Length: 104
Image (tube, rainbow, N blue to C red; front, side, top):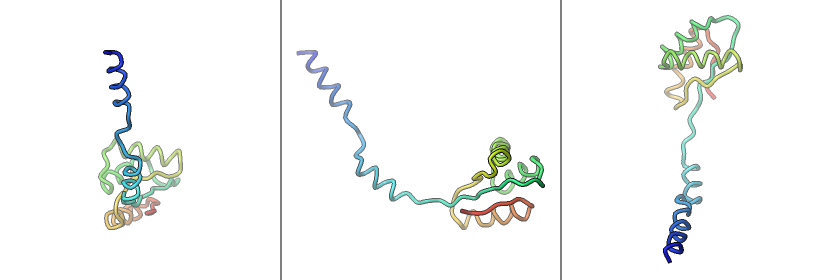
């Protein structure tokens, strides 16, 4: 009888705790953020890109370095996500600093 009780507990504890219908509804209700994308160029130095990302996008030095390397090797990198009202002034500052960026 003890084994049978243990077996029932294992069956009940293995039941999913998330209702897939609720999970789907939650995904649908999630608001999509816009992305600020930085593109590679052959003009700007790593130091300039890193310093600009730190000052404009509020990155740490480590985050800015990682983004700079991703841009260098992949051609582009999402450097910030958020609302248009937050990203637009940042994008303008990046472009004014001589970087190539856009909001998608």
